Amino acid sequence: MSEKIVLAYSGGLDTSIILTWLKENYNAEIIAVCCDVGQDDDFGAVERKAYATGASKAYTLDLKDEFVSDYIWPTLKAGAVYENDYLLGTSMARPLMAQKLVEIAEAEGAQTIAHGCTGKGNDQVRFECTIHALNPNIRTLAPWRVWKFKSREDLIDYAEAHGIPIEQSREKIYSRDQNLWHISHEGGNLENPWNEHKDDIHVMSLPIEQAPDKPRFIDIDFEAGVPVALDGKKLAPADILRALNTLGGEHGVGTIDIVENRLVGMKSRGVYETPGGTILYKAHFALEKLILDRETMYYKNLIAQKYAQIVYDGQWFTPLREALDAFVNVTSENVTGTVRMELYKGNALPTATKSEHSLFNEDFATFGADEVYNQKDAEGFINLFSLPMKIRAIQNGKLGKR
Image (cartoon, rainbow, N blue to C red; front, top):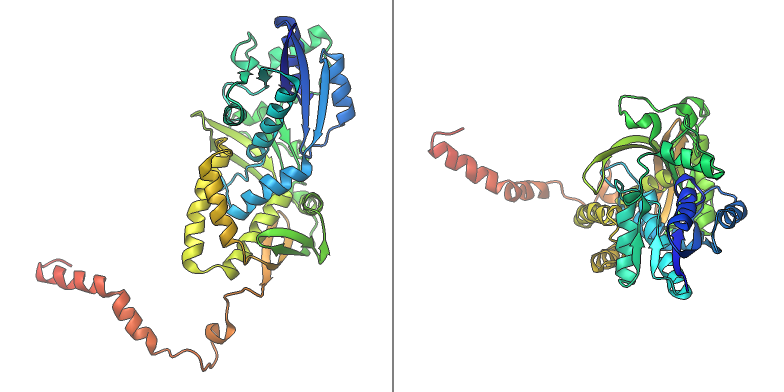
């Protein structure tokens, strides 16, 4: 009886070659698993291609709702942003995909899971850490770490020699990853950070220069930190994100061109388009600033940095992530309200916020006359607050220091 290998399959360049290569080099039955997390693919065509290139079985899993509710929303609520730029679109999807690969491997009696991640990237860590966390008895196979191919050009040569249909060419050889949250672009002319990215790279959003000259205003409703409605209309999680992707994309929102530090130790350059996600992050943060007190806000910002690192590093299935979620859920209990956003020429700007849990009190904050705040009280507060500085100055005076 031949071995069974479950392959994380997208039908793109790498996994198309891997499926055929596995058939050539292993006495194994290849089970292709394609995870639909919102990428713009013809999944029927992907499934047919898997069978045509040697798969004995092909699964297509619709994971969009689970992806948004169980991965995107918790990361949004945490405010997690990697290195102040990256909204973790690829990072969030990998643990969900790997979890489903494990489930299918267990159901099929397969002992090996293969993936198309390179030995230079972060995704190999994300996939394999999740597999190890959920079923340490399953082996992992990463062809990029063992085969003779050295470049994506080599893969194109192999595809041509074996009659494997691919969309990539030597001219447009970007490595792309798309889901409901974003699309990433790496490789090609982006490998030189002095090269400006070309406008034809855009998929989800317009270049800023092509965006409308008139702003668009939208209202987003949140309940306990989660988006629930757009312009007063309740929508399912995935539908809110789709609508915001369209609106943000039309106004050139959410495209960043960054150099980031990969987990494996090298820097990489990528262009990320995250139109809806960018709008949501800015709206969510604006609402938190209205509702959370100063100390909670400060500590939550610390949590956000650690949460981002956990997600980026593929540590989703860990006790620490679960513990941080507990903190985030408590601090999000009152993050309910509405944010008005202005979309204009690549910008997503919060212009108004309201919430029944707002800590903004007009009676106290007003510059006009009020009956609730005695401004003389500030003198005693300042004397106590500055006492350590005052004592230090006195001591420096005794020592002849200034």
